[in-house]
Amino acid sequence: MRLLDQILYRFSKLQDAVGERLIPATLASLAEPFEDRPMRDRLDRLEGLGWLDALQWLEWRGVRHRLAHEYRDALNCAGPRWASALMAAQGVLGCVDAWLDRLPPPT
Image (cartoon, rainbow, N blue to C red; front, side):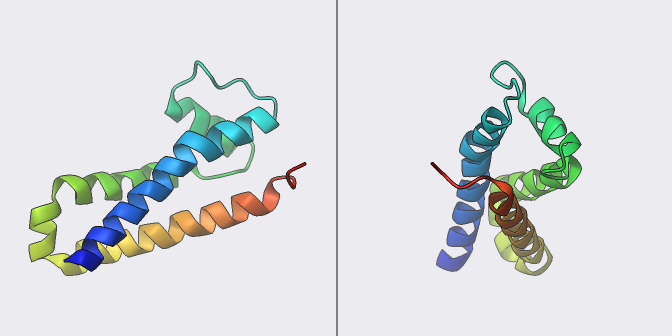
């Protein structure tokens, strides 16, 4: 159970960090206005610029949401739900790795 807790926690924290830090920092570095825009508009803009697939990102958020809200049920049928969480986590990590490779080095 501890392992499953850690997977959900770290998957959630990774997505939070990307949404709260990496997305705004990337848009700011590209001189794109974002402060008053909802997250979906930010995702769509980054998709238009080739940084991510907005629908894929929303699917990963859906996996997270389902796990968080169906947590106790998910423990009883761990296989498919947790496999989707692991695949989503790998997808998010791959997206972030490619993203970080595109950012200019810090000055």
